[in-house]
Structures are given as structure tokens and as C-alpha cells.
Image (cartoon, rainbow, N blue to C red; front, side, top):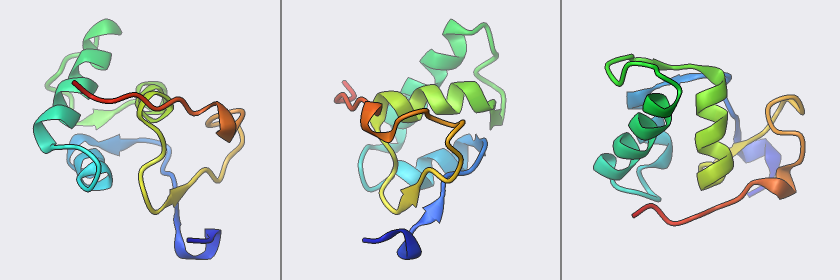
Length: 89
């Protein structure tokens, strides 16, 4: 899939959009659990609907770009090769 067939990664997203972006890679429950852990570490309420940019980027850096998306802004993640994937447990 080339860049023309992909969407640019948004600056920030809601939890519902995050689940849509990763639904073909991870379960809804696992996605929500992982983003809630990131929010909790930053003392942000898990009840927040919109995931702030830095926390969204932390999720993307940890779990990789969602399928069908590309990084449009070099400031989002300095080096696409540094995106580190790990399995969600």
C-alpha cells in the first residue's frame, strides 16, 4: 500500500477513533486498556474522550502505526524506523 492509498495520521483522536484505527490489529478491550494505562501514567482521567497528542503518539510509538495510515508531519515521530511494536497482553 503506497502513501496515496493511506490516510495521514491525525494529531489526536477520540478513544472510539483509536479503536477503529487498530480494530484489525487488536481487540477493543485491549486497545482501551492500553490507552487508559498511558493516560493513568500521565494523571489524565480515563474518562477523557479525546486522547491528547503526546499520549496518542506514545501509543503509536509503542504499538506501531495503524494499518492504512502514514505519518505526515515529521514532528509527530522523528523517525518512522524508530516505531517500536510490542504485543498487547
